[in-house]
Structures are given as C-alpha cells and as structure tokens.
Length: 254
Image 1: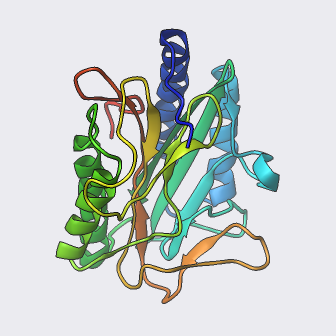
Image 2: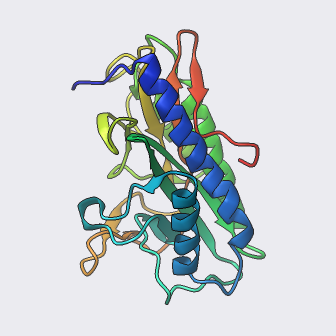
C-alpha cells in the first residue's frame, strides 16, 4: 500500500479544490426541496463547479453519467440523478460531490431532509454525523487507520444501526481514489499508521437495518440496502497535520 505524502504545493491545491466542493454543497442546499428532480440539482451542481473553475470528477468516471451522486432513502451511495426522481416530503438524501481544480481533487457529501421526516430518519442522520465526527477525532500522527472504523462501528452499533462494509473512505487529492482504503468498521489499532501529509476521506454509511448493499444490475452503480431500509452518509476530506487533523471540506453550513 503506497500512501502518498503530499507536498505543501499539493496540499495547497487540494485545499482549494476541497473548498469548492464544500461551497458546492452550501450552494445547492437552497434548491433541495419537494417537487424538484435530482437531475435538476445535478445540473445546478455541474454549472456551479464549472463556473468556479472546477470540473465535476464523477462525470464520465468509469462511465458514471452525471456530475454528482444523489442517493435517496434506501440508496446507500452512487445514486444516479434523473429527471424521473422527484423529491417529496419525508425523503432523506445524500448529495456527494467531488471537484477537480487544476488537477487536484476535493470530496465531500452531506445529508438533506425534505419536509418532516420520521423520528427514525432523524436519529439515523444524527448518529451518522456523530460517526463521522468520532472518526475524524481519531486522525492523528502515528495512530492507526483501524481506529477510525473501530469508533464508528462502536457508536453505530450502540445506537442500533449497522455499518456498510462494502464501501470505504479512500486517499484523495492527486487522484479521485488513492491508497489507503479507510474502512468504517475495523479492529482497533489495525492498519497502517497515519503520517503528516496524508489526505483521505472518511465517509461512514450507516443503515437502519442490515449492513449489506446490493448493486443495481441495470445501471451498475446504484447501491441499495438489501432490506429496503434507510441509509445515511456524511463525508469529509481530511489532512493529517503535525499535531492532529485539518478538515479540508469544512464549511460554515455543515
């Protein structure tokens, strides 16, 4: 496993791209409402990224047809925006954007709610955000990557939820996906040690029911819960610093 230690120049470039990714989610938030299609949101995301000097990384990546992933309700990740998918009251959704600016990548996602959602959905979203925050707290020089998944798994299970294990966080910055894989459920003190200059995502996917995902056979992308129950996800791009962690995709609204 070759984990890239980024140079100062590379870190500065990744920070710019990460800020645009965060700003994109801030921008799109005011358009997320009942009655709009996920394709409408994706078109706005594409234009915003392009107008601000970036490229939407998902578009064309391994054949992915849209500029963002928008995953509703029982969709765990990689939901493909479409004009047929219309948001309605009670929906929960994750919007995942990755930007490229001058060759550097920034990756983040956030949950949104439409109207009044169920108490179960509210708890799921809150616990998922807490899982992300707990994972980020584990990012320190010399600590092992497995600690991230350990605390996430412990917190999710304590609240009666399961952790998706078929998808993980990943190195990012010079490419869309780099080493290491960042598992969201793992043994404590397992995996490689973190070093200053490493940049990667933490993006726990937490389910109400079973942990397993099933991939849509028609589109080859959409990952859904096997029992049709709700799933939630939050994601940040983080940098290991000399003293701890810097969240590169943080914004005033998340």
